[in-house]
Length: 253
Ligand code: PEP
Image: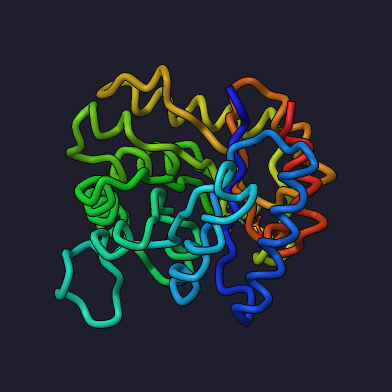
């Protein structure tokens, strides 16, 4: 199985011209023999144009379009939000659900994340569900288990089977002060904890797990060489084409 590399551009780049530049560079490294699955999640304002760019050159073969969020209602319901059907019409296939910055900086609760997850599934999108504890102090494993259970509450086994899970400890996300990446062993342990929590209700033996949190060209290899880790979710480094291409190279086996 190819490794999966998800680029989460967050609120960058500042302009469409820069988005094009980044994608041209990525197109170049795909032509240089990168063999990994790639999902690009631009900010909403660039989704339509990025969809067109991903339809060209080597990107057309090797890259899919993702969105960074989805509204938990259908079209026409909430001012300023973006619906699942709108994303699908633009060619979006994947959507990040419950990213830690939305959970912790924008106060998105587990209930809201659960509703967004249902919206993504209703629209036929592949949810990339982000889970992760806030700190490693105290009862963090209980926190992770409770977040996992609440995020997937009420879903069917079939629905859970359609999700990818990104383990992204909040303390490891590069925008946090003192952020540092988890260790591969620590990430695998947390993934197994999430798996066990879900295994009480669902068959997660085939669920794909990604690691996210300060992934760089320097540390990507040690995460990606673990068989339990099917890919990486990359934030900060994903808008720096040199760094991101090196991560794609590392993901190529
Ligand atoms: C992210 O935003 O999903 C992320 C993992 O960020 P970073 O790589 O910058 O830590």
